Length: 155
Image 1 (cartoon, rainbow, N blue to C red):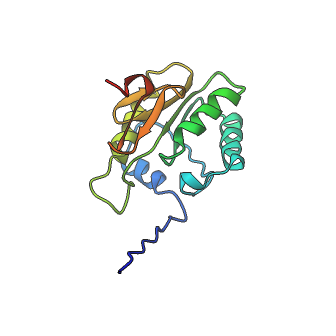
Image 2: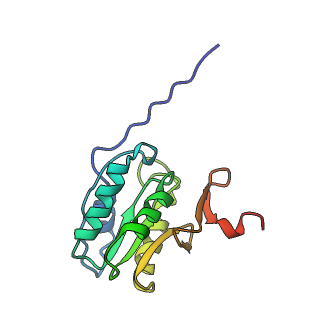
């Protein structure tokens, strides 16, 4: 019997800053790298570090690019523990990575999230697949390769 072994290689640094820069946007952006891990490997300490980074940021509009497996968990933690209430915080990611694969949903999800920063009131949100979700409702449908609301699963 032959066994296929797949080894995932994670990047040392995020490709998001270069992608954003390539868009030639009319907004100033600031980038902070918190951790470069598969989201399944995130620890409570890693999520705490995300919380502290957001809490200590001078930015009022924040996009967190996050792996899809635990994105909802981090969003829920931020909503429950964040002391500030003057920020719009969006978590987004992609089912297919930004680089190395084509087509990828990453450019759309990131652009959609950047646009929604202007519309949403202060709070924590997950923006995936052209939808805005609250941390309480969002869930990943692995079989469909997208996110949905827990209130729409049986529809």
